[in-house]
Length: 116
Image (cartoon, rainbow, N blue to C red; front, side):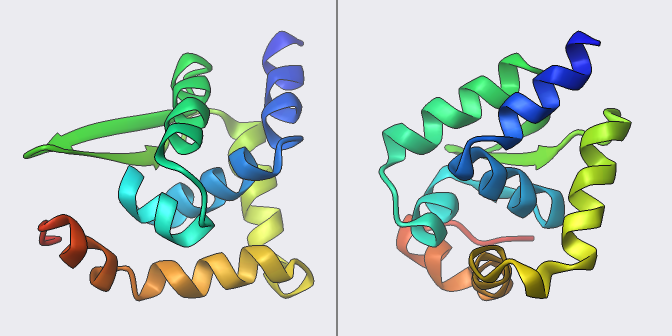
């Protein structure tokens, strides 16, 4: 039961929800998340730390960057995310985030990193 309540606690925060939705769709680094969400690096890092502590995100280091992705082992969380994506047109902020991550290469140029 604790795992289930943790999912909904995490999703109840708008910033964490938006992060989860984005890292489900693509591996992203902190600078990309900051650019898309227009929030500070410290706020993104704080939220990612919470998501890591709850074992919801995986991370991979590439050079000086850490890229985050959603772990797929929490069936409830993955199911909720997929359901939201199925109706993404109903959530304008999430739809806008999705559009921004499609063209994220320009953000990484600022960070001097090239995606594979």
